[in-house]
Length: 354
Image 1 (cartoon, rainbow, N blue to C red):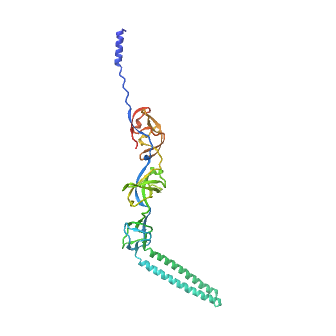
Image 2: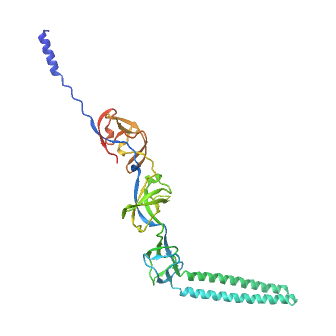
């Protein structure tokens, strides 16, 4: 082959080869920088202002209401009369019971005198001991009937007192469910009195947060009517079972420094979590399964993606708690993690953690 032919062959071969394709640019990846903050664990719930003591008052006997002495919103003191029933029948029964007592007392005195006379006759041997025993038995019977009459009279007197409905504690009348002239049954609710000196806030806590609560925890309470003023509260009661309708747990918060601003039925915000430890929380989409293990994709500073096994905990409103496998300051992919491959070059786009 001549030199010219060789040059022509090389030129043709070079012309047949395709030019090398430039490398693809790194694909963008939405990432978040791992951090810890109590704000991620804080919990603010909305509740209703209530009284710790809400007493439903009812008569212990039935009858016709002849008088009502309070209105809704009236302040009452312990022992104050709320309403009265017609006492005509109970007064007559009390008088009859008292008459029975007087009759029983007279019979007892007569039986006692007979026993004394019979004892004198026995001493003089005019009658036998068996005759005296009969009169002593009559005396015991008279005494028993007297005791019975006194017990019935006491019961009747109680019924007479039950015609007046009185308040069991200081408070405010919240509801009235009966009017004068109405005939009511024993136990039928007439009025509700609430204690305004013991104010609470009732909130419904989701089951995912119940492990963070315990009796005596201090919380922050703010009224929606005045969010600038802060009140101190304490967890007083935690329901042992979830509400069947809401699947949340009813928690009662005692307000330690409540003032006149608190009105029953108002809306209040309760902030929990001041004693909650810092935790690492990442968005739920950041978790994936790599070879059957719970993992996240960690993005290095030079943009290389690699999977890493982590230990995940409970789910919260802001994400998933990671107890092991991540450090503060690392970047994790939070979107499209199922499309990443080990060692892939990416271009991180940081999303600010909430």
